[in-house]
Length: 178
Image (cartoon, rainbow, N blue to C red; front, side):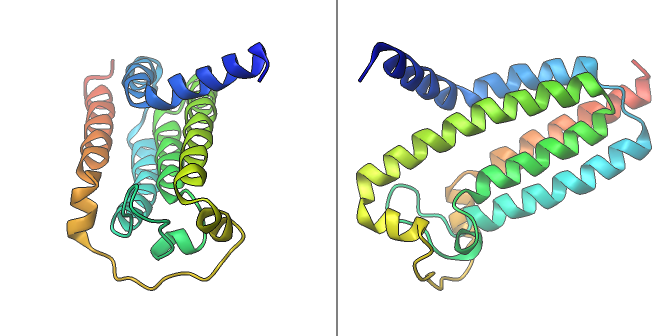
């Protein structure tokens, strides 16, 4: 592997692993630059709730690192948690009502989520091999009921708490007109 490829691989790994910490920094910057109104806040929250619903649905089917999950939203998309996160980010952008925030959030999501997907797919191929490749080609889904216990075990409550906190602070910004 060339030095450039090694460096790119290392960068992908760092960004993917630090995406949550980077997300807090991105959230703080977003809150400072946001210009929300009650109208944009309500629309943004509605969009974000759709994203969180997708995340909860996915987390309720996922058995991390134990299998190639093929039930629930995994029947249609390989990365429903990241899809949900992207929709939540769109909701934040709408609520924030700022072009600068939109560019910033889109850049953050493209880099960190793109890195996380690359790292995750490398891990899944290494762990599950042909089974993962079959899944990516659209092999048959597995029927399994949604489990709220599984969603809790996958700590989806942390994403919910983050969304509530973020929209709470945006609401406070509207109330205080800061």
